[in-house]
Image (cartoon, rainbow, N blue to C red):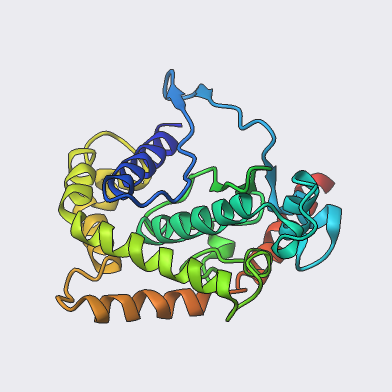
Length: 258
């Protein structure tokens, strides 16, 4: 719970940094209150469903798009039949979480850790693996970001106008976080001895912070070079992660059979 709280607090900080320069990426930094090392309270996200639930219900690459359309009826003449505000919210929130989860190297991003609200807000939950940590059986099959086929198709597919907007928002977010890299890294350094599992002294917080700086391309002075790096990670991630999902499903099946 304390590790989840740290991640959500960092998301909240990023949200404030974005909004400070009038960039609203429609993030959902929900509340987490640890009560001890073993328990705590977490805000209930009313109406949110996992991407797995969307896929099980619609069984199509456009499952998220279908979910948003069904939850916001009465817009048959709008693009994809979805309220444009809802679609814009989905595009913006997808961009925000793609960039933030990449910078923090959040692992174990299976489809039950990605949720969508009827309002179009996409969000990530469950941060048991961060800063490059991953379950042993999933280390080889992840992607730099979790940008599923369903997410891409909800925006109209790669090359579409809305996917181009998504890429633009990703680049904007990345530039803002690069400019505030010192603040982000200082916060992580201050938490270095707080006993957070994946930021503990055993993992060497300074190494973790250096990796964050590398993902922010702080060695590149030229903004265009840094942006090219981000775009390469987006291209590498788009539609990927299917093997990760298969492994997760197998794991769930095996646990159910015990």
